[in-house]
Amino acid sequence: MPGAGGKARYLPTSNDHRRFPMSTVKPQPTSVTVHQQSRALEVGFDDGHVFRIPFELMRVYSPSAEVQGHGPGQEVLQTGKRDVTIVSVEPVGHYALQPTFSDGHDSGIFSWEYLYRLGIEQDALWQRYLDRLAEAGMDRDAPMAAAAAGGGCSTHRH
Image (cartoon, rainbow, N blue to C red; front, top):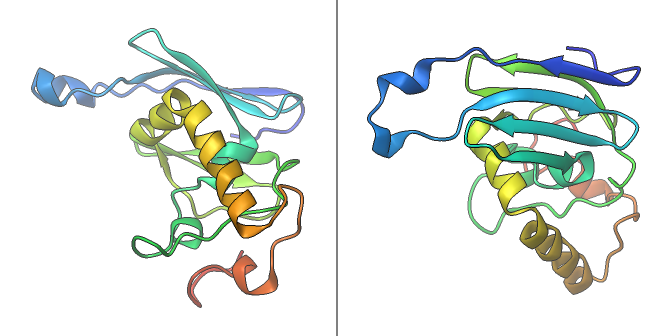
């Protein structure tokens, strides 16, 4: 779904959660709105939570191997993402969204569970990101280092 020109909506229609026992039920999305001007993805869930997740937070915590690495301790600190936007968002089955960011990053598949976590833990995640920047002597607006920009392995483009 294109995100250009304001807001775009995607309404999930999954009923898959009804096939699982209650103990494994995760909140399901009820609405998704891309807010280009404020650079935030708004996701509503069936438990009543509505989160506005900044594009920058999504980009620096992308669940892609390029950002997360292939194992613990391989995370790549992302910088220069303050003004990143979402160019488009595509549904991935009934379980996730795959945004394309304005910096070309498009390999992160954001499950509903992961988006819920980004929303519910937003303040702590922001602080963790700022702490990691400070520890590295970096700034949010610093350009990505050439080695880090390519990701953790040769299979990643961005």
